[in-house]
Each structure stands twice: as structure tokens, then as C-alpha cells.
Length: 297
Image (cartoon, rainbow, N blue to C red):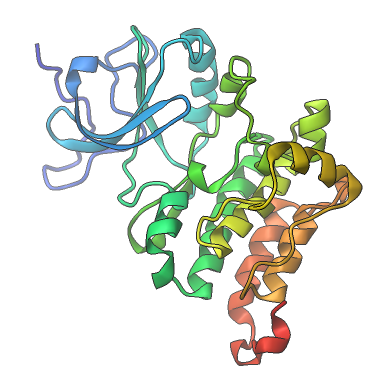
């Protein structure tokens, strides 16, 4: 049986509300699997695949499928309840889930260009430095909101930021990392993770700030792997000794200084996301004519 439409319409020409897809279930956001059609695969990762889909033959959505055994549906449901409350223009909106059987489906808004990592690798040559800094500022804005809500991402990286039209960037997969970590210890994003999180399992908003510095490196290098000449083991060994990645080619000193602040050894010495946002946005108020070779490393 086809699900009845559950969108709230103010008139037939207006777009549907996007705070969720369903009202006719116990928790207001579990929807029928049969109401979804998976159209094409957008990508795949360690824990599942992502598809472009359509809900009730009318609404374009992204559908993340989680491999069976990746997480306990009950654990995910508890985390998703928090995710539903986190609403910001630079965070991917969770629409609904399908959890009554595996694989679990996570239904979100659809971003036309996929992950920031792939976008940088495929379209990076068309980007100007101002575009790249604007992307970083958008991510910082979304993370500043999470910071304000006392929420930790735990896996901030270009692969977990999605890109829409006009280079709009939104942070994704907040809320999934903590649940996944408990069952996926073999997979650990060492090159994005702060030393205190690696060695002491201390994840805070300041460890997210460290990861943001790595994300800025990804942005300025068009999606290059961080620490390109080093293994995970070498990174783990060298960071406590003070090693930090050198400034990437053609990266403005101003931007590298921001990255380096994110990689301060003491978490308390790292900037807030609010500060990172205004520092990146401040770039657009600078006299760009002064950016000659002397201002690049």
C-alpha cells in the first residue's frame, strides 16, 4: 500500500517542509522502506553505501545504507534523536530513518555534488583560493553551532562534508561517529585525529578543531591525503614529538597559520570554531592585492 503524503503543504506550489518526512509512526521519523526508491549509487565507504533516492515518487533524498552489524539500531536511534534537534544551515538535515530491518537506512537532504573530498579531487582546478576559504568558513560555521550545543563530531574530514550547488558546504555524519567507534576499532582515521584522542581516547570539541585543521589542508591541496609521505604509525610516533605538516604549495601564510593554530599540542590552546569562522571570513576583508609571493610559504 502506498504511504499517504505526510508533508505539510501551505499551497500546492510550495516546497515541502524538510524537518522530517513522516508523522504517522511512533517516533515521528521512521518511514516505510517501500516508500523509498534507490536511483543511483553516489558513493561507498567503510560502513555502507550512499544512494540518490526518491521518497514517495516526489522528493529527492540521499539514502545512506549501513552495513549489517555496523551498529545496534537502538544505539543509532538514541543518537538520531539528538541529531533531529540539531538544525543549522551548514549541517545536513536528517529527514528520516528505516530501522525495522537491516540494512539501516538514513535519509537526508540530497547534496548535488557529493562529498567535499571527491569534489575537490574532481573539480578542484576550477576553484579559486577565495572559494576554498569560503568552503572552510562554511564548515567552521556548522561546527561553531555544534560547539554551542556542546556536541562533538568525532570524525570531521572532507569525506564527511557534502557539497551542493554554488559550492554550498554542509557538515554530515555528526552523530554517527560515536556509535560507529564502539564497533569499528580496526578502522580509525589516524591522520585526522588529535593526539589526545588517539592516545587517551579523549574526544572533545578541541579534538574536532584539530581535525578541522586537517580538513583545511585537504581543501587547499584539492583533496590530497594528509601526511602524504607518512604511514599512520609514523604519524602516531611523530606528532607527540612536535611534527606538523609543512605549509602546502601555494597556500597563503594567513591560512596556514590558522591550520597550525588548530594543531597546538594543548587542546586548551586551540581556537574555538567561532574564532575560526571569523578568521576565515576576515580573509574577504583583506587587501588581496597584497597577496604576493612574500605572503606564501
